[in-house]
Length: 416
Ligand SMILES: C[S@@+](CC[C@H](N)C(=O)[O-])C[C@H]1O[C@@H](n2cnc3c(N)ncnc32)[C@H](O)[C@@H]1O
Image 1: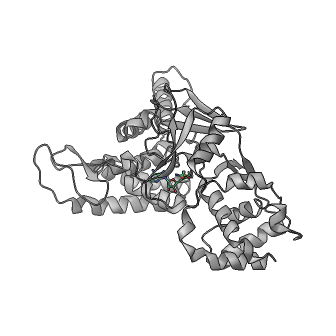
Image 2: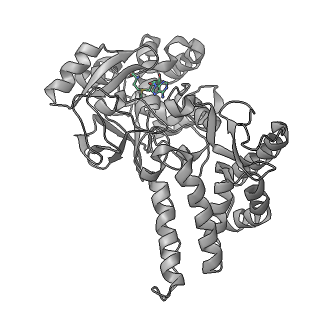
Image 3: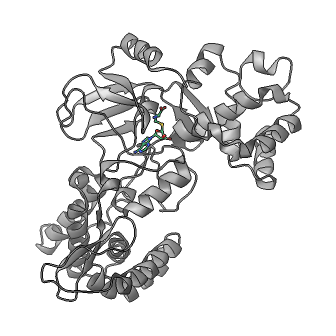
């Protein structure tokens, strides 16, 4: 990993308004060099490198086959990116059908974090892959680092063709489940302040999609562990009570389950109630939402119709109950029903965390609610069209997956 002085030299040469600093808990981070107001552009940055997948390439198919057969924790996508990040010197005379990059570009790619460095379990499979490709195992260490650089730092650049991009400066941002900045990427990555940021404050982004940010702490941490291999230490994840796990006490008041485990926040009326009664049902609900996340719309609607009333009764401020209401809203037949669903969703969304109101997911629900309201008042003659699915497209370690599946992704919409 490159040291902070070199990175700051690079940032200064670009006139950047952020600086790199080293922390014990998160490694290198980026800190604001001056104050920013909400909405300010903090910087724009072109991609350092973009790699497109080529499913018609024989080499790409060979990588897919290899990843299927061998126990390699890097998919064909990352192997392809690593192969396409080698230099002419690395490959010498080998006639591999991939593109080569300059030594300067490769050096900069190698500045980026490679968190699996101390875990050598992948090495035998990587060596085997290099041998299968007719390469020398001398390249093992470099190839392994490049694999990690792409898996943990790249952003989803396009879906068709599938392409990943590395933005050098943006790769040093930490993730935060209540991020103070937001990125979108097209030709350039544009980073904007989500709220006022003071000089000296860390500038954070989300590696998760806006939708995933509403999930419970345990879910968010699990996604980050699976896709990016770290334990999230952000302030929201460190809070004791999880506002995405709100339950209704027997007396009717609202209580919250702990971020880890099954403690219940105290009841104002002093009710004693074993949390195990709630957590068992919560587990079933979460399982149901995960299982149905990829089901077709009609199946999801039928599931939501069966379970949403009970879920709302027991777990009124829970991310999984919100998920059922979203499925219900997709299939509402009347304006009244639709309005009720969207209102329940908003109740949860607006209260789940401080930054929720700056989240595009909340914006979509508010838009849908407004459309239904206008339509109920007769301002709109036609029923409003279903609101667009919240798109995380090319935002941050976006990481996220519109289907809600937990999988190995690059910072998609959110990053590293
Ligand atoms: C894309 S890199 C960010 C830059 C990285 N800190 C570096 O030194 O290059 C992602 C890595 O940063 C650290 N990190 C980022 N956000 C974090 C968070 N919320 N909690 C703990 N570690 C975090 C983790 O080590 C993670 O693997």
